[in-house]
Image 1 (cartoon, rainbow, N blue to C red):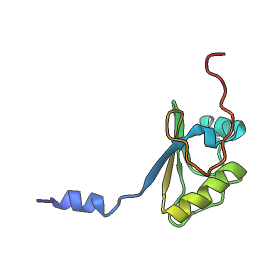
Image 2: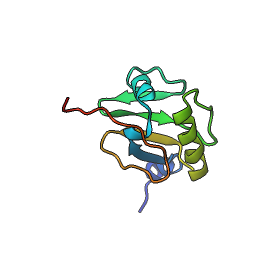
Image 3: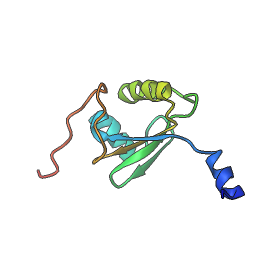
Length: 102
């Protein structure tokens, strides 16, 4: 049986999609790491979480991120989790990742 707190939490679910950091240009990755994106973002050790909104609350100044926001909004995604080990999404642009072994 579902308890009232569980039902209340379910009413506030916001979809999140995890995607590879390789979908961000090196300059946007750096801005994410430095917490300097033009939109609300939360850097992590391996990427970061970015708020899209539903509907999208702002168009990012970063062109690569703006293109991802457009697709995310169409997909009903509210949060994007960029992670170095997350999936590459077919159809989204890819940027070269720095070689961590260098």
